[in-house]
Length: 309
Ligand code: NAP
Ligand code: GLV
Image (cartoon, helix red, strand yellow):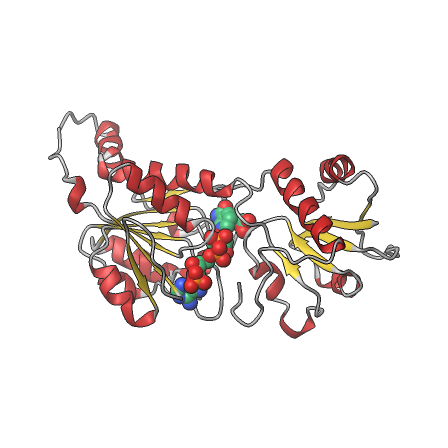
């Protein structure tokens, strides 16, 4: 068996070693533009270039080395008709839960305001907040959204989730569909975005929707930058309607300099690290799925191209 590897950062060597350990009978081939690719059974890729699509057309399935599928589905009709399998959690849910819990606690306990005060040499205790009134709403109840909500609930925050199809999850209010979004936003003090980027979610959080959040709300975006209309968010922060945002993802990455987000003290920026691919877990999951496919079984996390995720 041969597995074709590609990563936009070029670092396929450690992946080849881990695949050799997980699937001893498989040979790996690092894809290179302009170099003939031998016939391969599967591909494992992250952010492949258009020139690779012809070789992807010849494999039995394409595995993504990440959870988001927008980097592949963006090729539209040019994408070969081959099953695409993304990572399902693979250690990302716990990382997301840590990241989001940190951001929510930072806002709830006003650490962002104390940091600002300390820079000005101010000793000024602020009023305590009531956790029961600090509701956290998570957009997206998938492999990563659910562990985030569970962690927030364990920490005592009132939680609510929003998805495309109806859900029934213990101890949390579940909303579904566009017609419920305004009501969901109106009672959400911290909005956490965990949605895939699709034609339906692109620019979902625009001025009108962000304005539905209560005065003094916060935004945490750990999904994709294009879900948020960036100039609208900045305007609402400057107007004082949104008290702060923690952003891990941006419409253009790396976030260019200059960009007004860099200069806005109420925006906290991290460089797309809220849930990193853990290579060991990823290879184990992909190897298990390859074995299942070889036995004629079905596998989880196959991308539905119509839905876009
Ligand atoms: P997932 O399991 O596919 O879950 C997606 C969730 O979004 C589902 O609950 C789905 O609803 C909901 N959804 C999709 N379209 C919707 C719409 N139009 N309206 C309402 N709800 C909608 O995805 P995941 O594994 O949790 O990952 C979520 C995203 O996180 C990924 O797509 C990726 O972009 C991002 N991510 C970011 C990082 C990072 O480091 N920043 C790392 C990993 C992933 P249904 O349940 O009804 O289908
Ligand atoms: C990272 O952003 C991923 O989608 O895995």
